[in-house]
Image 1 (tube, rainbow, N blue to C red):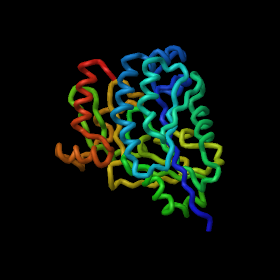
Image 2 (cartoon, rainbow, N blue to C red):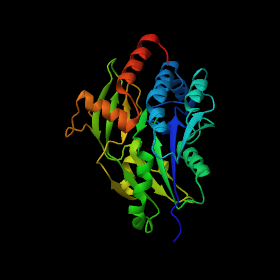
Image 3 (cartoon, one colour):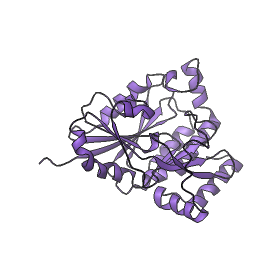
Length: 283
């Protein structure tokens, strides 16, 4: 029997001014979109999130056999360009890729993911992070370990999806960070699509909340698997009530433990960094 080879390939579009239709906001031109995405105050927040939220969770992965494509616009300005490169340099699994701007979003993502697929893989587990997300420390391990249980379904279908609906919202709208349990189907930061290396389509060819219309979706909700940022510039339109999990409550100590052991983030240090960010104006 052929040895099972599972490639885990993730992508994060980091403030890329692609074609305007890729965003929920209305922009008259790519120039308007670029001005919005590259606004210095907005980029300061994105760099802070990269440094203190996304990268720590990626660095803490128990299974190090994965690649995260960090998709960046070719005109990303300084000093943010250098800051991003400095932050990700210590994580070998993160591969920065600069792309041309104003291009069709889905085409560009599909081509990039296809370029990095391993043709020798039995299956490619594709995942997507936004630039204000974190993933649980066992996210890659779970993406890999679940597949053998689903392999029989995969033989009969071109694609399968694995959804991790439980996680947390990180509310950054006040000086005091809010961390609230959430449960929501098919949110992007905890979603895997299993596909074949030579498949003509991939994860970003489908609207994440409509995946169930295109493939079988399996759900596992025993542990929180994502941390999703909530702030004033979300493109997705989420609110503090989005996916609110009223069935689970945590004390402050329990939240500290969840952040530390599930995401590799120390909550008191995160709060301190947030206060410095708001007070000192540094990223």
